[in-house]
Image 1 (spheres, rainbow, N blue to C red):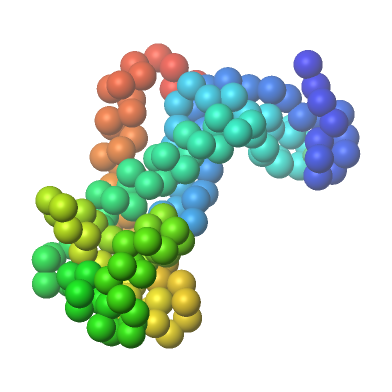
Image 2 (image 1 turned 120 degrees about the vertical axis):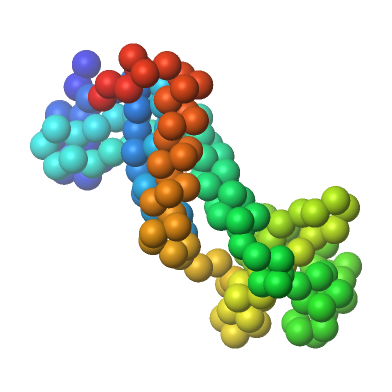
Length: 160
Ligand SMILES: [Zn+2]
């Protein structure tokens, strides 16, 4: 059944179920499988319910995390070093909700959290330590993630 598109207001928005590739902040295109969304055949506008949004966020986080942990250890700062640079307490770093949620790129090793140097420096300057990941490295991660998802969901559902 067609619905009215929220963008062009034509009755050309169609519900679909399957694979969806959609750009996400910092990591570029993310692909999720077996999700519900609507696509307008007139203007191309895609929109989706909360579950699909969550699935996309989850995949974005996975790609981001695998990029962060692939960085060499000397590119990270301990929470003590990070706190000194930012002139805050280590408690501030571990308690601040937005930082915990990734405003500064971070990785856990054992019980300790390490912060990516470049991200800490950017956070100090702008209040936001997130940046777009390098394109070539991303392509590889996206490819790996896609293969993993394909294996998980079976090749046959990769239809639009
Ligand atoms: Zn439309």
